[in-house]
Length: 633
Ligand code: RUQ
Ligand code: CUA
Image 1 (cartoon, protein in one colour):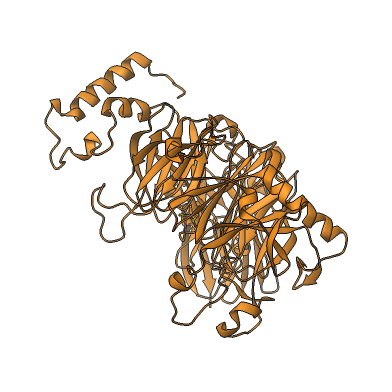
Image 2 (tube, helix red, strand yellow):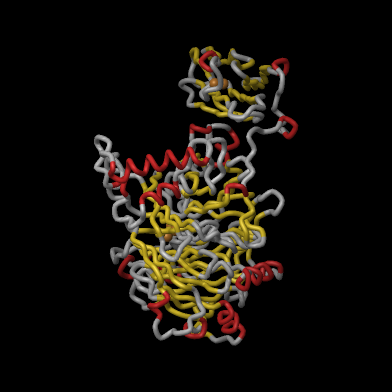
């Protein structure tokens, strides 16, 4: 924790009083049972927990926590250890709070969609470490990938690619940000737009996995390759690193490759004993594209493993798998099957050897299946319903157990006594309730910090004051610095985080204003003299300036039916001096940060007189920051 101002002793003294109050020496405040305040069921010492999470006024958190927002389409930002919500970054859904989706640029980026389903955020990396430049996030609903610039916490690009149906196994970034990945969760007929009945599922439907290349200078994303895969459901993934660098891994279920109408996929997809992990050698895929082995289909370079051997392999895994995670050192690939009480550890050396030896069980649609017993290192009896695994950088892994509502801590290989694997599961902590993902501090990097773990619970029954049937999502902060895990804090968010990622606060260097010198917007104006209105036929174009506490011009006169283009520049160069530009009854609400220029184009389709005003509080005279939009019939 960085202390700013308040002397540490005063703070500790205050916490002691607070803790003493909460721990029962004083009566509980009215209306509270006191049960929650004591951290019922946590098994943690409440004093320690309070000291570990209390960030006094003026102090700053140690880490950023970026939660995916699920079907809200957004990203939520909190701090660790306070778990306080700090910001919302709109990605796939308009957000009037920052004017996102109202100006021309962001509206165009949204591409006509008003929502997305954001699941797995992933940081850009340099040499396997988070570099604090960009954050990527997938849209599970509409085959898209977004890039957020961590310099200003804004979504800068949304890329839609063809053929991917339900992009769930995403966004996993390779160690030097060569690629961020996408994959098909719900196979559909290939190519996109083809009609074929579900009775032809096994033959006409296809899965796709894709590599999106990231420009190392500006982060711009372009589709590099797609690989055809059998119609399984490609679920979660992870990128290799260190010895496994060059591989991408995805779990897949429904290797039965059928969709039986009325047959309930939950039943039909669990018939076989084993499903698979798909391993892609992305350097081989790159080479196959360079060698001309890809076919351009619907604008995508598509590789078929039948024509490009050596790009894809399957590894058998306990049935209906969900998570696959590569250990921090890149040696172990950990796959977890929801219906098996064990997690399977694969050894990358054995995988490479099986590939070199062509040690295959069979081949599916041109993709060899590596012999299970040749690539497996161990099966670890972690507990019921294992989903996802994180690491502490000290040789331990942490696996979420959905059915047990717990986190298991277990030792990574090597094992001196494989006849008794139970001994390597060294600790377990209950969580409330039904955990999905979990994330440790810098947990996907090559050097996790090993201090904090956040359990992302799927359900949050009753550990908060009631807000009706649509209850918040819950997360719990756990201390993993010692031998035993300790529960520290319950936190709540809006629907619906799936995964989240954490990064040291000092790795992010966000700007506070857009420097005037850097403005390259041709429509920016910096003086009231440049403010003007120009008419060309039925188009009225306005260059407007916003500054405390007026707009120039502040009266806009147009005719009904005109196309109106307004460029607004906020010329402030002071932190937190944002201005808004909203026109009443025209559904327009643009928010302009200091030094920013935004453009909004619309049709003046209603006649009358409409006030426009600044929506973002900017000064004592904020209320006076207004003007009129006059539309003559
Ligand atoms: S999934 S609860 Cu969308 Cu990441 Cu595993
Ligand atoms: Cu400008 Cu309020």
